[in-house]
Image 1 (cartoon, rainbow, N blue to C red):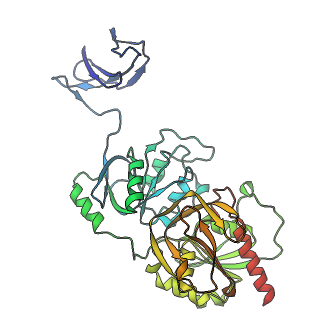
Image 2: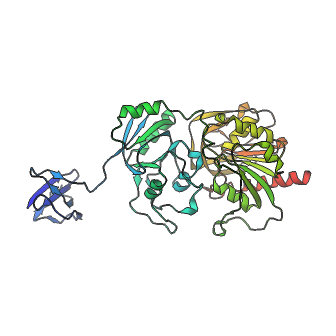
Length: 447
């Protein structure tokens, strides 16, 4: 019987046995430091060792043949700066281009995957271990995945959660979303922090050269692209679902009044709609290009301008819609809606270096000094210096001092740059939904 032994550093030794040229069984066995390898003592460094014994096929010259018992690198992430990152693939295969951003959340990867605001982007998770809780239908923020791909350090080899229905790998494969792991996410994050968000190409196609992928990255741009149209609904519909009783956390005092809210779907997350419904709102969701005149014909008590992906300057039709509604009924803008309100008021927006993506951003309410831990996902921000007189900056991000909230009482307007429904604090910002309801109530009483 032939014995094929390969020495590995740090006291590791791979011993392969073969009877003839082929063996029917293939296995890997981890032995303790005092085990014997077919009668041969394990070579060590005096502190014990680890033996990995596997059965593989050997060719006539003694070299190892057949399939390796571990996955090898089969994917590349090529960034526009020319760097090439080798990795292992999971989920879908192929070639995809997108903007690479990093997210600092420790949990909530399924909510991130189904957040329409990530359309056109590769999301790199700075938390190294992803996939251990699997996925489930309860945590989805939209009916499908819109992001370009997922980049992680370590893909969990097991899944354990009381709600999970399938693994992360199967979830991405079914939705045709590419993912890579075993890549240095810390090094890529440092590069993004230093150079800003970068365009990248993710590929599992061996026939495509690094140069071809680099050219794809350098010829693609996300700035000025209307990403809202691709994530918005096609026709109006009514939203009825509230937060499930098991997850409800506020006092259930009932809502004697019901307010009709028209929600513009620029990529709205389901939980925003659930929270509004839980506060007694009757919600009609309309597409991003729904005419303002049709909205006003519905005689709503308030209008929500939702979150959404991309550059607010790329959707002038949405800005015009906001202008036509502003001042006529109470309005509430979240993320993209906040930026559109800023532009509608005459202000300017700008692209941030690497944006805010994560569930651990401290925000201060300048009206009372309260600090909330917020969930954020945006690459653009409103320039407060460009806003007209009368517009109040209500919140700032304590990490960089950027504008995180606006109010204009004369125009019945309020907005936030972050996600009050996401509950990373866990429920710090949920009170803003009550503020919106109170604003609608006051307007109704005054009319």
